[in-house]
Image (cartoon, rainbow, N blue to C red):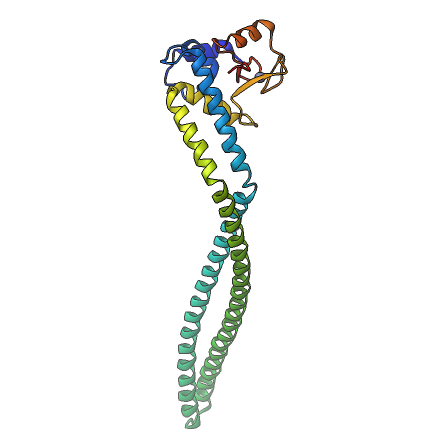
Length: 270
Ligand SMILES: [Zn+2]
């Protein structure tokens, strides 16, 4: 740990990147004695450990619930998109039905004309129009047939997706129920420790709390305050503690920070 840098942090009271090292000089400047402050910190850590244990009982359930909720939302969005496609296909079918009616009327008109025609030039011209109208009629008819096929396909997809949604919803309900039963079985205990934690946190100044939360959040085992391990090592990182520091820890009146991991080390009497 860069001591020069962290010592500099002491003169910056609003530093949100607080560590125990940056607090070292001001640690004693509070209503509580160093010994009392260490005790409060250790009890706070103990309460947080209990809360962590209770939260761990929920295991992967909260994450699994989130995955299912996201999956269901994505499937529902897909159904919405497919229904929008169906609506636009249906509108296009109506347009083409209108076109077909116009072409059919034109065909009838040209057919009536062609029956009364005397010269062949006029006949050629009208029969070309007839041919054209018949072609356009077939194009509109083909479009309608294909659009109907696409609608059938979309409806089939919607049916399949709805089935998947219903299965996922059953999964989700089961997981939510399981989670709720775990949460309710531990709710009282969790409330007890949470209240304890809040009462302890209220005794500490903002900078100490900020350092505590930061170190706790940055370590894999969520420990910021640890006891001495086997009378010689840091209970957080298990590196050996120097004899002088062991004496300081045993005194209970000094803030001792592990030089390897930055955690506060407290004695067994704390
Ligand atoms: Zn350590």
